[in-house]
Image 1 (cartoon, rainbow, N blue to C red):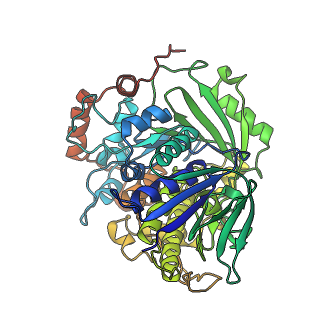
Image 2 (cartoon, helix red, strand yellow):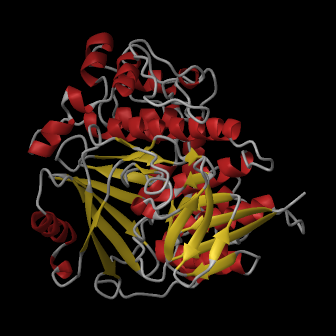
Image 3 (cartoon, rainbow, N blue to C red):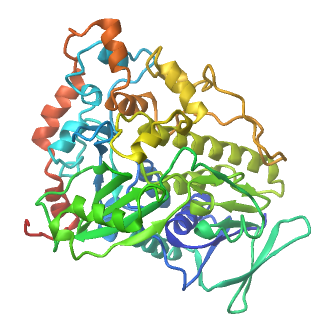
Amino acid sequence: MRRKQVLVVGGGSAGWTAAAYLNAALNPGNQKLVDVSLIESPDVPRIGVGEATVPNINRTLATIGINELEFMKATDATFKASIRFVNWLDNKNKFYHHPFSRFGGGPNDNSGRRWLMSDRSVPFMNTISAQPVLCEMGLAPKVLEDTNLGIPVGYAFHMNALKYADYLRDFSTARGVTHYLENVVDVRITETGSITEIVTEGGKNLNADLFIDCTGFASLLIEKKLGVDWIDFSEWLLCDRAVVMPVPYETYYSGAIRPHTMATALSAGWVWDIPLQNRRGIGYVHSSAFISENDAERELHAYEGPHAKNLDTRLVKFKVGMRERAWFKNCIAIGLSGGFLEPLESTGLYLNELAAELLVEHFPYGDDMEPLAFRFNRLIQNRYYEILDFINMHYCLTNRTDTDFWREVGQPGRVNTRLQSKLDYWKIKPPSISDFIDPFFPGQPESPSAFGDASSDQRTPVDTGRLWNHHSYEAILYGMDFLRDECDEWFGKNRPRPAVHKRVLDTVNTAGDKLPPHDIWLKRMVGMQDYPKS
């Protein structure tokens, strides 16, 4: 069998994730079935702001063959066990957690219903997960010794995205990936529309069977050459800018490193606050329709405090949406060229990983790509719409009316119809596993795609609950006071305190004794520098 040739066009975290993953997964052991190459421009700067991940990254690193500790050392990585949402419900410093580990969740799970019948004096996720408490205690999700804690404490990572891309580059080129550092000057296609070769500024003609477009929003192959359209999500996700500012620990260090991401709502969006080993990365995700760049920068500085006065910021522009088809002909878009759904819930790097996983599963060893493209596109489309619904839900449930932005995101027209059908249904029963077995809800309209060929699916997208299960939906719903007034009417106002899962109590007691503070773990295990407290 002739070796298949794959050419990744574009570097960054998307390109190098694709190259490293495909090279490892398609060439197991000592077999060499696929040749993977990557070309990136020496002149195009990388965005480098996707610094938070979801737990799927553990599987990605394992598939590529990367050691966790070596990865953490190379990328200034820290642990991420949850996201802490502040001021999303109102502007009174209330917060809730969306953690990665929880107990229960089987077919007879009634934890949400039981909590709704309680007085809500304990946050819902605190009744089924130990992680909100462990995060507030500032504990790492792992012990110092190389032993199993014996309890599930899931985690992902915060990391320097630029260093991550460089680490993947060095790791994969040492294992057979060919690297070209040149500008692309032409993309040649056949009469039937398939790409045949990439022409470089240095005069190289690079041929391949499969071309991976990782050229970011420029979308050099999938859009500019092949003309695949973009589906716009800005009707439901209003944010389109981020003012980004690194805060070095030499400038300000609180004396501890949070084991979770902070997502704090401001006047026209929200701020991510991500701790690394040598700095924090903060960024104000906002809508340019509701705040100017200068005002957004001032608000970000006010969030950080007086020590941020002389820190530099930069503006990152983005668009929210996805490709009609991520796979068209022999081209597959991965990363920003394929889609983006704003930084909330940290799905940017995850979608790179997902596309690489699905491509391995649907890899075209033969010549017939259309059936594989059909399934790949369907699965990618479903996941994008799942993420759209989930992020849209964070905004539309707000009680905030203090600014034009928050009044607007709560308007009925800013809730997509698929999400609205879920919310209407969940007013009758809490979310459960069966909601994602046949994910079609009463009132959800059929909305077939506007395009149709052998590589596209005419059915409406559905939420299969593959990234977030019903507990994740409940974390957001109940963190945002969903059904508070209705429960007062149904069950009365004098209700019992919530019952906390016994395993949560046991885990907090056990982990509280065994887990070290996050910064202590980082210093002992990956050599984080010791910074004086500001």
